[in-house]
Image 1 (cartoon, helix red, strand yellow):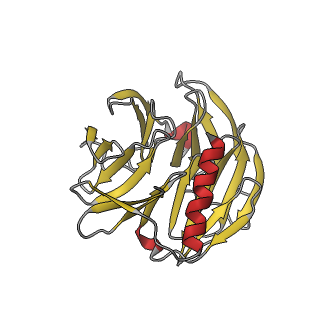
Image 2 (cartoon, rainbow, N blue to C red):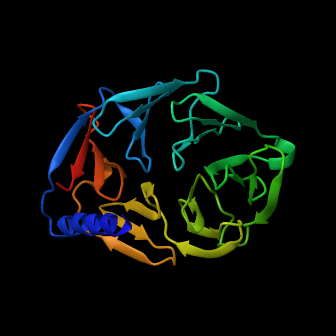
Length: 265
């Protein structure tokens, strides 16, 4: 399966680099979306301007929806584990998880005395949740019982300026923390700092599985686990890209409220 996914990805990139058009499949989601996420089952999750979180199958059929009117704007959605979807509300400092039907599972109310101010959260392994304390510049985590905590890691000196983290992502081997103005802080799965990858002023972060793409101007930059940066050029109108998986790139035209899927036949 991994070999098939790799070959599909190579096919996709080679088409893009040659400037050729890929077959397009159009999925109408009947609404303008703010965020689009894709899980490892190729199910889509969208967040609308009025804060409806919806789950769709790969043909565009709506499966489930979730709405929360009490906590304001939803800041982050982590669908790495489709059986336990993580939602983070920055303003309310509230974290909750949903099951595969978008029904509430658990809730975490963060204590400011213990955590300062959390700017980003990500689902870890075995129901662990990673948190970045922006006030103290510390990375830490809480376990599934909501009480136990992993030793916090100070990250204030890992780059030239104190980091400002607004997004984190986890893959099989590392945890990545993103600072828009400086670069990417890479930590191991125990939360210990491993390296800093300098890159700044990107427009969008896209992650899927073990792959990280950053959209910067008219280029897509791929970040490897070892910190190597590879530029993929020749992709037209990168501003429309809202997500990808190992076979497809998802585009949103923003006018007719349609997400187009560029897919290998």
